[in-house]
Every structure is written in C-alpha cells, then in structure tokens.
Image (cartoon, rainbow, N blue to C red; front, side, top):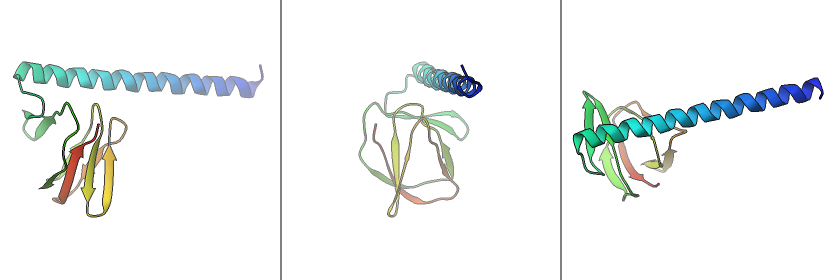
Length: 113
C-alpha cells in the first residue's frame, strides 16, 4: 500500500466516523424532542413552548402552505424537511441545513417531508 492510499483510507475512515457521529446526535435530538412531547401530552401538529422563546413544532405529515409574518428566529429540523417562501425565493431546510431569519418577514411555509 502506498502512502497516498493510506492517507485516502484514513480520510475516508474519518469522514465515515464523523457521519456516524452526526447521525447519532440527530437521533438523540429526535429522541429528546419525542420525550418532551410525551411528557407534555401535546398532540402532533402542535407547538410547545419548552423554555421562554424556545419552541418545538411537530407535524406527522406534510402540511399546506401557511402565510404569516415571521419573527427573528433560528430553526433546526430534527427529521423531515420544511420549505419557506419569501417572495420569489424558496428556502428548504432539513436535518443538514438550518434556517436563520434576522428580521420580521412575510413568509409562506410548509412541511414537505
């Protein structure tokens, strides 16, 4: 085995290990959110205030497009995918991508997965 092959193999192993760690953290987030909902008895589709200004939102199926004016927010998706429309721009976020809104904006949003 050449030195170049060894480096590539080590890099691939590191990437695989990091991907497994990210997946484990994602699964832990899903479990923690599920436990919080279970303790609160909140039905699917409801929002739940966990702490002041920290909300969990849950949907068990895709939703229709809902129009609103957003507050400034940082959104993380544990499972599935969500879409936000701002004018002609479309933003999709999921467990690998977050959404950051820095000002109040007129948005349309929906759960797509």
